[in-house]
Structures are given as C-alpha cells and as structure tokens.
Image (cartoon, rainbow, N blue to C red):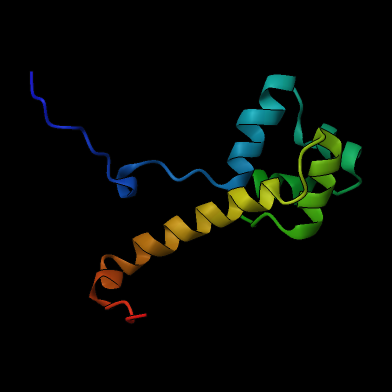
Length: 105
C-alpha cells in the first residue's frame, strides 16, 4: 500500500450548477416539482425549471425567494452559483493563470 497522499484535481470533478444542487439537495428529497416550487415562491415554472436545468444562472431575486422559502441564509444559493462559475472559468482558462506572476507586496 502506498503511503503517498491521494490528491484530487478539482478540474476532474463534476461541477454542479446551483440549479442542480437546488434539485438534488432540496426539491428531490421533498418530492417537489418545479411547478410546486414556482407556485410556493411566486415565479413561473419556466423560470424555475431553466435554473434547475442549468440553462439560466441563479440570480439575486431567486436566491432571496429560495432562502426565505427553505429558511436558508440569504446568499446561500448565489454562493453555489459563484462556486460553479469560478470553476468553469478556471477550466476555460486551461492553465493560463499559472503564467501570471503575482505582484510583490
């Protein structure tokens, strides 16, 4: 057995969109449909479904509605979206960041 630590490159991991997390962690366990959630938070089914499908980003208004409904902290769902976007941007840069030399203090 090797004693070397196992490292996982974050670029290899699945990057879950905020809508996917909304579905997997909140809606699916409660047996909720997009129509159920949309009705509960006062939005159209299409708007909710496009976020769940990852075709539209989470925005501030939706975050506030979801935070109120699920009794979460405001900004929780936006944080998931930001994490998703940062990893996607890092992947798109494809190592280009490594060529930037940090400015000395």
